[in-house]
Length: 425
Ligand code: S3P
Image 1 (cartoon, rainbow, N blue to C red):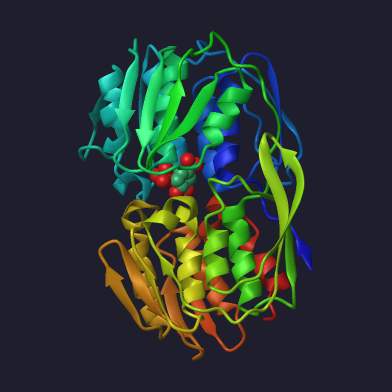
Image 2 (image 1 turned 90 degrees about the vertical axis):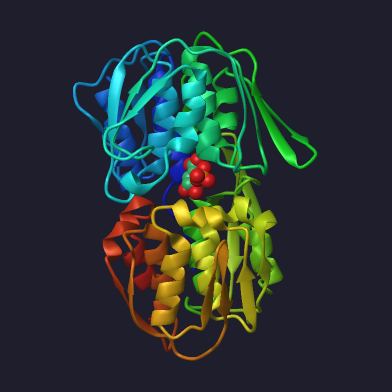
């Protein structure tokens, strides 16, 4: 069976923001019609950009950009819903604007740490005021004149890196930074394509990024968003675990090397994935991945794997529950500050369906088995927790009920229908 998945969540949200900042008409196709991009688009609209509703079928939209100086003060708080990416990237943009804005979000987003972005942006010259709890939304931000800035990120993070680069672009000041690992580079690729050249290079174990000459204007985009590998990963694991009707091919997936860390991990677990390159889309490599039923074995997953597979740890933990042996996942402390504390959520849910699991401060240990897995689990309003247990529940012999399944719309609307269609049921 051949399937596709919705557009990449990271690229979609960047596309909406960059199209608003560009000069001229951007043409965007294949945008993810999910709840996170809808929140980001809503916030960008409130800043004055006419962003059409994001189509549910990926058809093209045209966005008339406002230019780097064209955003205006919002008359209401910007509601970012569940979107950490939208929040942090827009904080960077707002840091360079001569007005005040308030950002709010849902309960999950309001519990996530924002200090990792507000601290460096404050050092660049923006001002933040927490309205309830320190370094959490709701937050008021007052942008203004920024100065050239250099920063060493304590933790590799594409959201923090992107916020600082966007502040550099919006405020027209140079930014240099380093991260202790190489996080996803969609911002660097897209900004470079729009005329804001961003360079990246390894320096020992560090990854250095530089925006030396922020441009006067950004060119508009003409972009087809690739399918989201983070969504495809759920289907690939379903097929590996024998939950699809035979082999499954997912086409049109973004294969940016800073995102594909899940593939070598699955390889170490015994998966033989067929990866066929397709034509690049929007400056990103794209391809098809084919997977079929495979006896998986446990693997050690550590901090060297985590940055390139940060969003795939939930589905890897689910795969580990069906592998032979005990999988130890470490170096994944960042999971504690995602849409929910994903380490706790995985441990609690795996236990609830009969998997032996150990919680570690920075990860978990999962003992694989072929016992039927049964019980009720919670999504914790986290799309990737819901989908990981959706996949486990779709395997023959298992019966898992996911409470709060609707949160999958954040990144993968149509997930449950597709699972019903391709699953062996
Ligand atoms: C994202 C970066 C990652 C990732 C998130 C999307 C992005 O977060 O987990 O789903 O689009 O930049 P961090 O930057 O916090 O690691």
